[in-house]
Image (tube, rainbow, N blue to C red; front, side, top):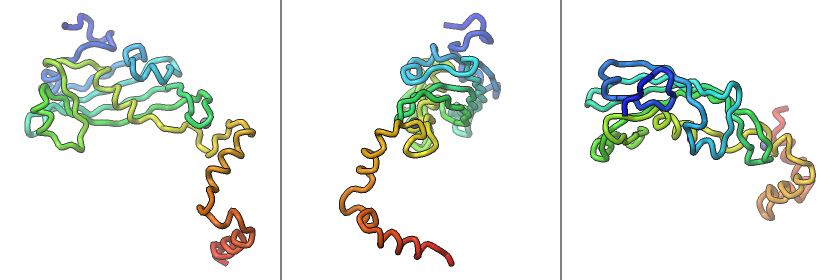
Length: 185
Ligand SMILES: [Zn+2]
């Protein structure tokens, strides 16, 4: 399907071989409704749209290479305290787009490779995995989370000082000894 209005459809299908030949650079806005896997774990923040810039080219061996930039705000649940927090997405990535598994096998495994059906791929196809891989496991900067209810602290402390793990937790003298060692004076 050829998208009739390419500049206004964020889920538009991109003719990536043509774009690579033209060394095209495109900018689009994409919304979570076009990113169904991301939408299961994130909600839109900010104005609800993610800004996407994609630059297409052919590498020396004739593979379509894409460099991308993504920016926007997502709302995610922290895995530590389950609180919703905003996450600023600011991501550079690159990937190859190929048309067959055979072509994919020609590209070094250290690269991200997308296998497109036919000669078209959508903006969402290109960016969704990149976003999912960039999300942090924990959103809160401090550990345990600054918003974690206090009643849950003891359980965490027990986990951190498992028996035999660290003698200093059992002996105040060991703690003092450690402090003296680590003091440069
Ligand atoms: Zn948290």
